Image 1 (cartoon, rainbow, N blue to C red):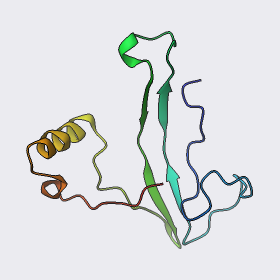
Image 2 (image 1 turned 135 degrees about the horizontal axis):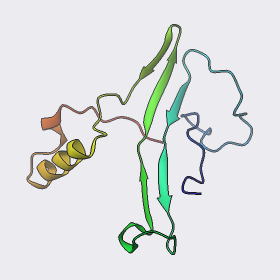
Image 3 (image 1 turned 120 degrees about the vertical axis):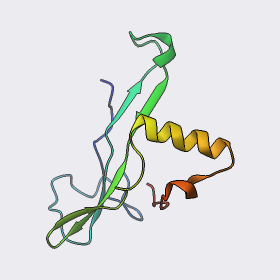
Image 4 (image 1 turned 120 degrees about the horizontal axis):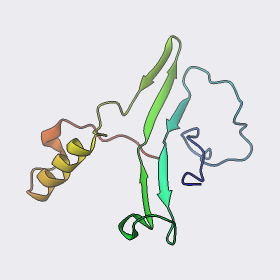
Length: 107
């Protein structure tokens, strides 16, 4: 009810939400997929008003390799305290460079 989308999708040109690519297609080396759990609270939902019309998604891009996988966005902040610190420092002109973050491709 609070996550009306899939948990992820293939990443790349012309594949986002593409109905011609089956969800049960085997993953092969070189393929990049997203893993993006999310919570989307609609307005009018039985929740405190401050949470209504809020969406939160944490997305990772994952490369399928010959021996397993590599999380391409693994170094990006995901914990609340790290994101708050990043935003606070950005607001003070320090930017993302101080956090040694590599800008990742996003879907």
